[in-house]
Length: 496
Image (cartoon, rainbow, N blue to C red; front, side, top):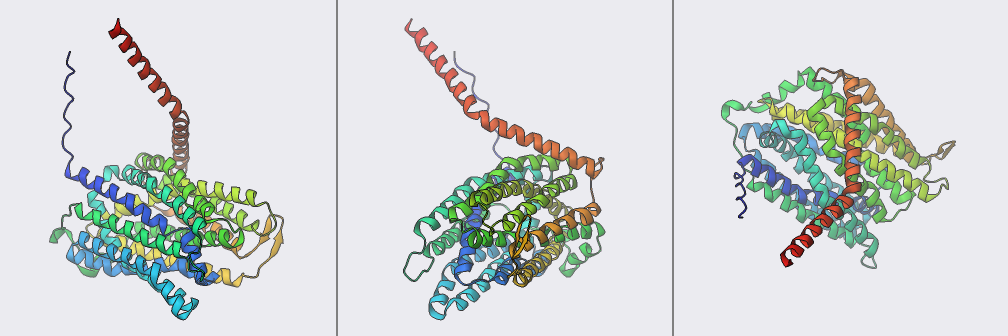
């Protein structure tokens, strides 16, 4: 008896095709962002002679460069060419990373380490400056491409999908740096140069794929001309309260990755593969495990409860890095200190996922629900990036001022890196206690009650995900056994 024909699926809509393209592009984008972060960037700067203040400046430069989002927002509103601005700016940014890979090395060989370090800092700032020009255009464009009803789940799933290429990239980068080290007698880190160049190529593919995404130029009536788009957010109390909270949070978090990398490289002297695993692979695994739960929580409970629940977790995360810093130079067993770092990094990935999902939805709502949305994106970027720049520079000054600290305490030795981590923890407490209560909320439940429900919901989802992953081999094996038994019975019946 013939089987009934399978129903023919309807062709994908234009929105579905666009979302698929954006998601596929992120597979290459995650390779780019992963390869230029972590141990390669820190060791490259350290090889060029970076000091503690230089690492603070390195943290601040991306935020300082993002001040260009203001003129970018004006340009986006006046022309409406969001796609052209985004693609052009980010293609240039990726090409600059090829210069970052080559120019500092040449300057180092011709004029010494100081010239190489200056060239590196200038190009690093230029890459982020060009990227800032395309930022408002991207947010405004994506607010139209991604339907509002699925934004939480879509961006969470998109990040999870990107981890499938980011995770092996982090491991390969760490292995290459440990396996090949410095490629010549002069000590030039050619493996890092190759890593940055390959990252730039992956980044170019990422942006070129956006050429396939359709773009509708906003009508003249839908735009707010010129600088008028920047006035509305400055008198919007709801927006300013949210921006103040995120600014303090950004100030606390912006310099931490650079100083954690510095701690692992200089104090603990871990191998590159171990650093990549701790700082990139562990957060990726926890993000893959938790992003979907946070996205569903945003759609179910709202943005503020998710933000509050995630804040309850990232404060202890800063404390974990403080414990690592306190015990990194006092003779504590390396395996114990490294274990604390691995657990801290894993937990950080879980709770920063919640912060990112909630923050993305806050910004997209501001951008997509107003005709002067790109102005909101630009002003939000300026406020947050000024805070990040102040945080990076401030932490750099703090690290320089406490460079010689060696204060023994019952918990360990207070060094400059411990001071940085403890200060970060204090700022996060201020953000959660002082500023978050004034952020506008939606829904009927009080934020505290909704935050507890969010933690229960996310915890339950994480438990179910872990349980499913644990028993997946058993379910697959049982399915294969049943299928094999059916085939054997069918063959035996035919022979009879």
